[in-house]
Image 1: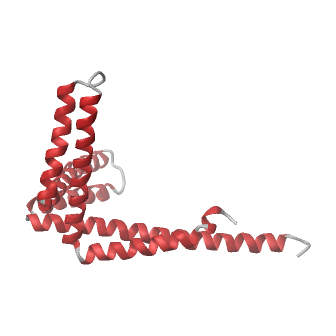
Image 2: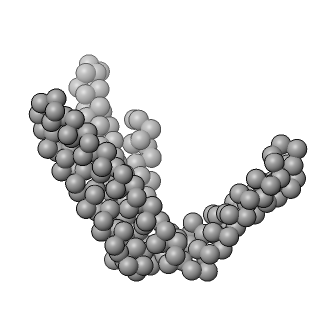
Image 3: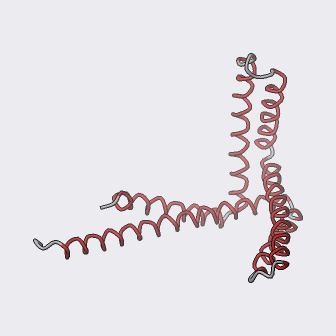
Length: 191
């Protein structure tokens, strides 16, 4: 019996939990988006505090001014996000929008290059690039509430897909164990 199959009940349990959490995030995407922003705020606040201590204690290893500046930025941004979580959700969605825009332009460029080389199916790259650009425009034009919803939907889809993947992994491990057991039993002349 392989290790994945021995632990497969836990994979299934985790998978079901992730599916439920993913569906909850999709059901309440605004709340999920704000929750992600709040977690980010706490992470920045804690890392800023640790950076402040490190800058003061580790003066010999790090320039005090730069260390304090880095810590102060994390502290201020973390505090702003904790006080105004919608600001954090908007900031995250704008970063996603910028990523989609730049990635879309790069994919369109790659598609045009493939077309110039007479490659087949370059249209898929072009379609993907255009979709990224359209999604970027949508993200950038969203209101603050829409930005939080976007983050919640992304988290929901991510959790849902991860949960499904774990459940599928469990089933594959169980099927593999069953087929290995049958093969070894039929190959054993003493059974």
